[in-house]
Image (cartoon, rainbow, N blue to C red; front, side, top):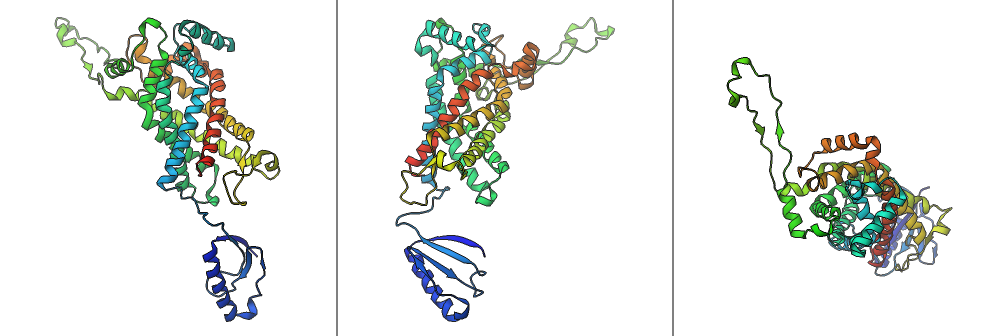
Length: 408
């Protein structure tokens, strides 16, 4: 016999009672007398039209309770607010580390000597603080917050919406569907906020006190940067044309010289890195949360939802368990996507170093390989762990607690 829990409100319960009486009168020999205990009633409907015979437990929902509609505007706004605040809190926590990591990844000439050791991170932060003060450690942080609030808000909202479509019920809950939902959410959010990321990285990359640029001048500089012109190789020159040098001139292939496309520099490699990063982040967090809610661990890792009036509401993770799940998600996702992040940073600051020309994804990857080999794709990974693990932990913690406080 299959056991099923059906939640009904008071009016629905009365209607169910009347329907049960009709069924009982129609087939008294197949319908045992109901027994009521508390607010529950056992019903049996055997082969009389509605569904196959089963035992059902009917529970009365508390007055005013309702099922959350994840596709509603109210749910999206509340999750967006919780996600935006979570992103801002996490980024503020790791702001100084983020500044140093960008300088290391982009091979800033002034700080290249500090790469390769944990002590170099501390030394770099000390030098920045001595030269520019505390504000220097948060250089570009205002642009970070302007970007991170809509980025985190759109990421969490998109994840909830994609998840509601791809995983409509519990039987569809698989690691692959979680991975796809997280990857699509990451791609959506980064597309909406990528220009702000390019501006933030350029502001953080500046290290000389006397060459500080305003936000407007940074935007103008990015807009007017142009790629390297691509030229065809010189063909063999026939002897009959040696006297005609003009005929041997090799025309350059025209390329875009400036424009809004510059604000999406490195976007293709960002998409390649975002697929494993966001996907693995949400997949790992949700999977770790499931394990921490296992019946053997639940007494130690969960606690009742303080904002729910229903005793049957799902418990929430305790603060340390939520931080653990989020931190582990950051560790896994950072490892999976870090090479793409290094390439992206180098592409984003390409116009600020060298001859001012921007580089493509393949050219940037080749340059990193020639400079340091495969280790070049993981330069600053230690700082990445030091930054991403607490950032992801705080982000998921604030988001989950924000949802509880906002009633979602």
